[in-house]
Image (cartoon, one colour):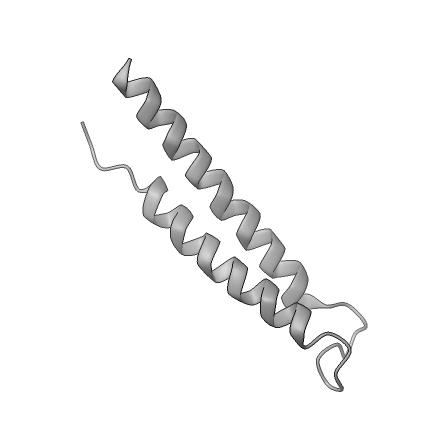
Length: 68
């Protein structure tokens, strides 16, 4: 059985995504945060959070499959 990196990577990306999403939501609409009109921090926070959750889901599925 090898090392499964999906669990720590999922946790890392999930936490970073959550922090970036919260920061993007908290600073939305403030001057200088959206020079292009697109809330970049909010969008990328959601992307990172989704990727982290996907990695955690894959790690959980692999762990359940190895127990069978």
